[in-house]
Length: 477
Image 1 (spheres, rainbow, N blue to C red):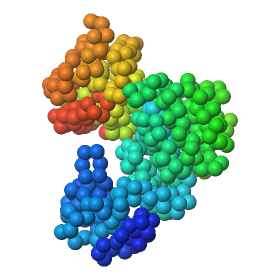
Image 2 (cartoon, one colour; image 1 turned 180 degrees about the vertical axis):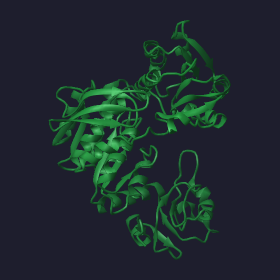
Image 3 (cartoon, one colour; image 1 turned 90 degrees about the horizontal axis):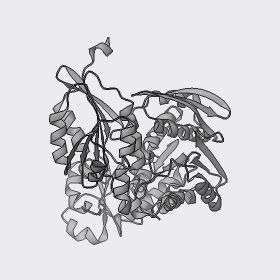
Image 4 (cartoon, helix red, strand yellow; image 1 turned 45 degrees about the vertical axis):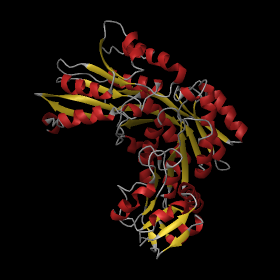
């Protein structure tokens, strides 16, 4: 069997002390005792809320063949008979394994950061690179101090392309992660007002994102958004870090990977992409100009890492929106259906505007309504009232006449909207959930979006639970 890691190698690179008869190797790595699979190693990481050591027995019951535990917790685990590798700090040990994974890999590595669009861009890259080789990329949004090393440590030795998402909400968080990843290509999707509570202005956010340049491999390439107002600053930061090649994407006439034209509808889009002076028509199976813009960065990165570009472009047509980031559901209600646009994973001013544009591009049926179901944008700090109030402009410009709100901060938007807009405001997500489930009618289009902490995914789940998937017989003929 081809192991992800042999136990001997793991113990050596993590400076671990083996206890018991270790298995020859492990087929995978887990930090979640609930989802660990047969033959995997369970890393008992101590997080902010829970300590993995408390769930070691459950991990074993679910099939873990090996545990990685900390020396300080060992006395409490004395009753367990499963093999273990004992280390000083479990998260630090995972980081050492991640570094070893990168050192053994011959893969071409791409890292992505930015205020908006990281996960969608990562999924696009996973999709377009797949025809050209074995792709390894993070599941979900594993982009923080444990998600990045976990993704790296899980990377098989025979990987052709590695795609990593790196996030932050404070300065200094990207630096140690990108130094583990050591990408050949680094993409910054855009700089926008996210995590403003931790920064004074957009330039500070840009400076934090620019830390990604510090981990680029010698001769590596930075891909920057030529249309973003922080482009010149990011270009200077890249040059100061010693980046040898800086390329750009966007609609700007000087962009290296240029979006020459865009046509979009509610579910798909078509772009005309200029790469190396040649214009190609590309179909994308997901809607939104913001997706199309990031597709140019994706195509540019694919070109740089040697992918088959004809197959990469064709793969974009099969792309589908990611759960919580524009995924669409057609749900049966009465004699008709409603359309649910799930944007519930996260929110900041830029992504809110993009989601409102998606809603505006979707036409209700019969007497249905376009409904923006919005919750608080968190981590806005002293700017919070202002950025929530400012959402009134995009909503009015898009002609959205029905707005359902929840959360303390959304009271500012409620007060900023004129009487011409039908506003329903509830203090809590649970109260808005009840209203949404009981108030939808056939033909409605709902776009649900908030910061993750508001739990708007529960509204999406409740609508899906209460209304069955709609079988459109006309479409099947």
